[in-house]
Amino acid sequence: MELNSGDTAWVLASTALVLLMTPGLAFFYGGMTKAKSTLNMMMMSFITICIVSVVWVIYGFSMAFGSTSDRGWVGDFEWSSLGGSVNALTNNGGPYGIPLLAFAGFQLMFAVITPALISGAIADRAKFLTWGIFVTIWVTIVYFPVAHWVFDFGDKAEDGTITGAGWLAARGVEDFAGGTAVHINAGAAGLALAIVLGRRVGFKKNPTRPHSLPLVLIGAGLLWFGWFGFNAGSALGANGLAALALMNTQVATAAGLGGWLLVEKLRDGHPTSLGAASGAVAGLVAITPACAFIAPWAAVLLGVLAGAICSLAVGLKYVLNFDDSLDVVGVHLVGGIVGCLFVGFFGTPAVNSLGLKGLFYGGGFELLGKQALGAFSVLAYSFIVTLILGFLLEQTIGFRISRDAELEGIDLTEHAESAYEFDTYAGGGTYGGGTTTLKEKIALNTADEEVPA
Image (cartoon, rainbow, N blue to C red; front, side):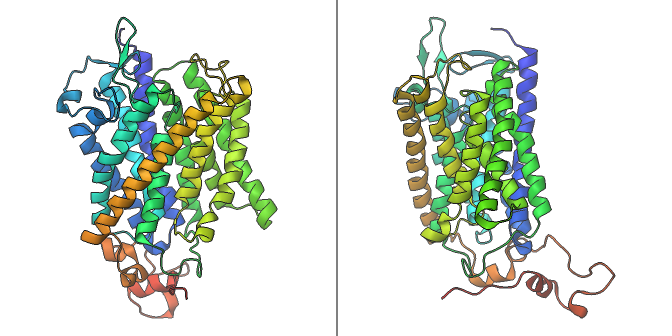
């Protein structure tokens, strides 16, 4: 196998697109929070880029894609896995004409965005230092092993034998771009942390509304754009498989947006801009594991189902009384499960050389069973380990900010700054017609809530 410059260029471009998704997520989440929580929410994404990029080079790539035992639980700890050879090519279930460093950089961006997704479940109430410590430990004991289970297809020798694959990959679980390792993983972890940190002040009594819907739409647009690298880039080459993944990503996302708005119109009488952004993300999440295994018409169906199901699922937090601030569970956990299981129904050999056959293509329940194994094993592992880790951090160094700090605004108490200056408004008048402190102005702009009875 020789270096393919076209494939390499596509993977490098896709790497940049996937990195863009995390700042896009920061905009998306930042707009959905209160004005007095915007900077903290965005900083939780940016500090994740910092932490994960460093630990990935030190040991993360080795754990995710290093050699493994027959059990396939985690890669080795050979610190030299990225040992500097710019000429080494990628071998992951087979040889690819792209540098190993390009593959490692591409996979790094998946490792970055996964814990960033979790942050939306605990908006407004997490200590920033503890969050940084959590991210470091979580990617080490949860993300890197799970990435190995799902994404490591082992080294293929010249005689065709494959060694060192992750246990889910070796069992035929198909997740093209991260429905299990990224979205179900993050959604389950978000649920666990929401339970550990508890409900925000005023939960259900005074529902928090997004402070900036334009910011939400900008973030959703950046996510949509970057997601083409996320999905089509996972083909690891500029080829027909990448084209299929790109097309499926586009149509499923558009259909997800429509499915969510349809539910809103029928249920509430009004389609909303927040619903449009959330529906698009739900479609993106659901198509991620399935984009290379289903036909485009099926991708449309998946998008509509994901948009509708996730729109209904976000209300579960009020029924079950857990405070998933920005609907990480309803969108990423539920959407990831829908997409993974969908492969078991609509996977078709007509679009993929693997010969996958879902239930509706004569394959019986075999593939569906494998997909269920992948989805629910990752869900259980991530939830249990995150619950324990979050509890230990809360009981030792503390994870949740104080009630007073939450009411004052986490931007001020954790970062000593605010996203917006409320000194003057259009027309030159002072806010409230008098002299007030910045803290008082923010309090006026985002009224404090009371603990529900």
